[in-house]
Structure formats: structure tokens, C-alpha cells
Length: 203
Image (cartoon, rainbow, N blue to C red; front, side, top):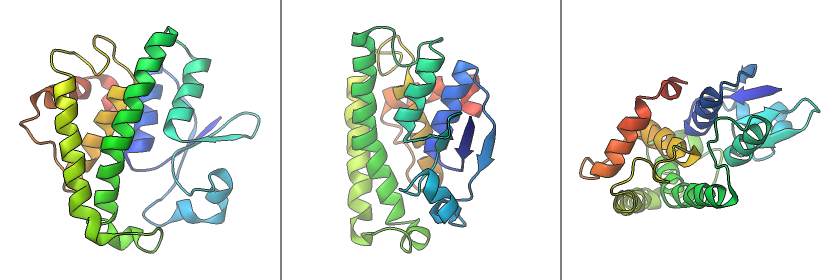
């Protein structure tokens, strides 16, 4: 297998997942700043022009972080980071969906249409007028999540899961580009710090 890596929260999420699993896969760097992900070679791997991508031994490419992590989890079930029962897996996937759609997407587009506009405008449809509103939505949903995880160690209670890694990777990245965590969200801040202490956070 080969892992097509780059700078950004999504590749980092997969790296963290692999580190938690003790998986090592040869990697090739894709320079997204230079637009390498939009060139023909990478578009053959992922027609959406995004990273990361995982090339399997049979030559097939798996893209999208949830699909990549689920594939690796099925191949390497220990330690369980999605769940060991149907109920646990459903809970993790539910929270992955909530974090991804309600927080990550708004963080990302708030940046793409704002601070990252110069880089993204030639590549995708952008709406500069939407940037501030999208950032506000992201912060509102982080505040909502803060209430949902009151009294919990992790998003799924006692279980450390892919959902926690997703939230951490995105919050950590976007704090460096103008969207820091509001410290009033004490439960999210505590969760962030808890994940940051794990060795996999250095991946």
C-alpha cells in the first residue's frame, strides 16, 4: 500500500489513526499549496482532487478519511477505534457525521472563502461573502458539542474513537489560521488537551 499525504487536518487524522493502530505505510507527499493535488497524476487517484488517498495492493484507490480509516480498522481491528459492536460503531459513525458536517465543513469553508481565498479561488467555487457567517456557524456548533460532552471523557463517553481524532485534527489546524477554540467551551478544550497528550497527536 501507499499513503498519499499532505499538509492539512484530513491527512493528519489518518496519520493519527495509523499511529494509534501501530500501522506503518509508505507515504508520498502531495504539495497542495503548489496545486499538485489538482494535476492529472493525482486526479487519477482521486478525481475530486483532494488528499489523502490510500493506494491498495491491488491498485485500487480509497479516498475520504472515513473510508480509509474504516478500511484500515477492518484490516487491523486492534485497538478498536470505531467500535467492537454494531451499537458502538453506530455511535462513533453518528458522531463522526455530526462533527464533520456541523463543525469541520464550516471551519473549512470559512477559511477557504476568507484567509485561504487567494489559494482556493482559482480551484473551487468560492463565496467570500459567506466566510464570516460560516465561521459563526462552526463556533455555534462547537458550543453545542460542548454541552453534549459534559461529564464525558471523550465524545463517545469512556471510549476514545475516530470521532475524537477528527475533532482534534480540525480544531488544531484551524486554530493556526484564524479560528481558535473559544476557551468558554471548557469541555471541548479539555477534550482537545486530552487528545493532544496522546503520542499519536504528534503524527
